[in-house]
Length: 500
Ligand SMILES: [Zn+2]
Picture 1 (cartoon, rainbow, N blue to C red):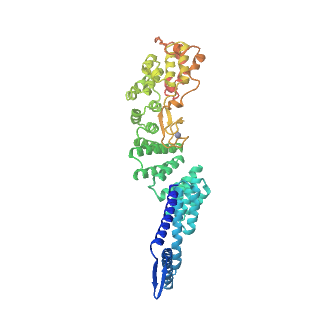
Picture 2 (cartoon, protein in one colour):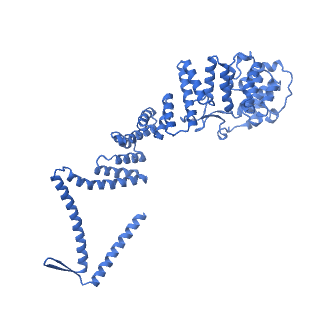
Picture 3 (tube, helix red, strand yellow):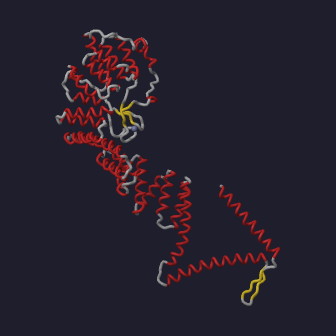
């Protein structure tokens, strides 16, 4: 817009300048006398100006003719391409100008114009890879996938543009959801340029999706070597891949190899819960219960997780509840104030039928962090202490609508997984699961606690905080324990064997 205005203004200025100049010459000078040999021309002022212009044109033409003559002479002297080169130079100049226009149109987001300019440029510049790149990118911009793909395919023939072609087609396949072809293309692109970060990441993601754990570990190693991944993140992700590899080996029935792979994964990242559990199982099988306990305790230090407690229980499967309570003392002293520890101790005490101790263990968790599990434990404690049915029902009713507590939640898409997996089944994110509570916004239940009085038959306030003094454990209450405990926790911490 501005440039057009400037051009118009310049043109007006030049015309005005010429008019004024011509008028000035006509008024002042008597004219110019030009003598060529014996001939003499008397030119008027305007004629003089025209003569100068004509002279300039002749000189320009002269240069062109001389250039052509030189080319012709060279041709006569044996340079066969001299004349075609002379004409090509002009074509080239035009081609490059068109290419610049095409590039500018692409940069301005005018896809269609970029395509037409690039097509014209290609006519002048034979076999121009740059014009093909511009065509491909512009076709991508305007959504013409077929055209883009043709242009990318044309780039595959030459060594210097093959990478651009492969990457372009790979991105198209990814957009179409054809991950098998995309993986093959990513591998080719990676072979050409292993240091290319985007290709590394795409390949890693596709390998993880296709459960090619060993391939993904190699790619991850390259990322570390080329400096596109910090060392600590590499260790953690490598452990994630190693434990996934171990799980697949276990599924294929090779338990000894799986055991070793899991122990290795645990060494890489001791705070990774699934690796720790698998390694503990492996160590138990190898007859090394002390090492198994050490591995689990190390992980509990960073990530107290109910499955770690389950694995810790499996170290001595047939112990009675009192002995188990004593043995767990070692584990729970590591994180004494963690909610997971409090609930674990309460559950162990419930299993040992020491309800006052269970109440002490859980403390005020039911009010500070009222998860479904904490409230169910409270119901079990009340029942164990022989409280009224209404009180027990009050706790259970609250548990129904309470938050679930920590789960395996994807950091990227906030979907949950029932068990730990290396790749999120919802968004395909790699190593995105963390043991955490769902963000509050995703927890709201529209018909929440206001329904409770109708269900329970009395208000929450009456039911829940009623403190029942611990009495002797009635046989009745103990008999009822079994069904309450099922709802107390979804992770079967205290297995039936140990209760018997
Ligand atoms: Zn996800």
